[in-house]
Length: 194
Image (cartoon, rainbow, N blue to C red; front, side):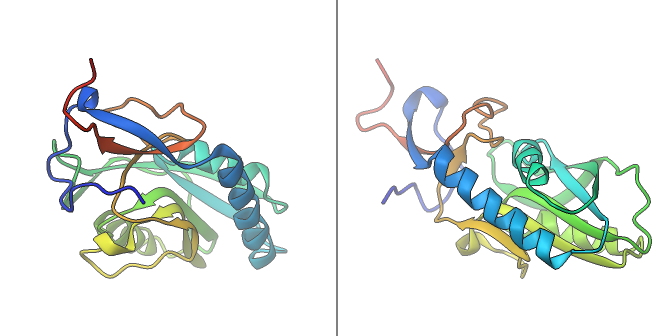
């Protein structure tokens, strides 16, 4: 199993890291289909509003909605909660609001990864103020061991340990979102790449 420093407060520079596949594209695709089947069953007979959290969730959300068998509308919200050290600081700011009314509607929030729980707790409370009929959360990755506030997603793709991950929409300083697999970043033995 890959191990990183218990504290992600200081992530080494990219040239001092190597990538190791944590979840292959095939494993991800299978799990996304399973999640979509569960969501479709749970919302059968309903039109769902799916809200993706930018930027990290956009690839996961696109694949997820392609497998839904129920009608859905989509929207996006963008939040900022990370400081320069890539660790959630606990203060959440909305930088892009949703444009769709969710009053009396079934809503599913789609996230790439839940870490401390601050961002999702804030967003769920904020969306509940708009009086949706129902509100659930689907996350691709869940780092339960990193929680700093109680939060549980309704649909979870994979529970992972304390890895810094990239690929499939997840980034390191806006890089590596385009990888089809999900990689764990780990420090190179002996320092930087030559």
